[in-house]
Length: 155
Length: 107
Image (tube, rainbow over all chains, first blue to last red):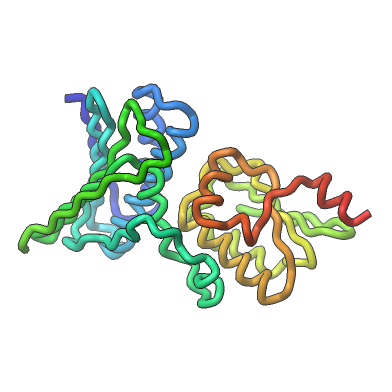
């Protein structure tokens, strides 16, 4: 298994380490420039979500990131200790007008992940959340929506 | 310092100096809200990465510009950032343009 594992404190400073690692992995996998940027952004969003919502910004609680290099796809698993499933927007485009009216500019991260990756899988339970997303090596057309799988195990 | 403000006779240009518009640089970018003029252009030529925390900072500028009845534009946006801006419908509120087009529009 050619897997890469990183563990970072829950601070945005260290999210950049994961992003830089994603760049190296993408180049190793032969991703083109656009796909590499997609990977970096998706990883950044998942790690940011784990820091802010999963671990509640507690710097002493680690976020784990695994790059799972497989023949037909690259999977990235982000692990936090929130134990809750993040609410996926289900592909619905965020209502920017509503955000402007209500002065609420946040809440775009999971939407972006859905747009950028080929699939998402989530598991939560026992005070731990695993958020896995993957990029197919032979990518399907970008117009196809990402497949979703959600599983919640009892605490 | 993440931004540099350039004032021309007809335009404010906010040069974003950081290569990463994210949670760490968001506050300094939001601070540009105090520098908005009738027309303000954000220059992304040095920006290599933007995530949703960075987009949120940009949205705050859009919100402030709307409140003040001012217009915001984006300069030198990469193809990937354009794709992301299109995904979240940002370009409706911060259209892409060039410095030449902005300067031509004032003459």
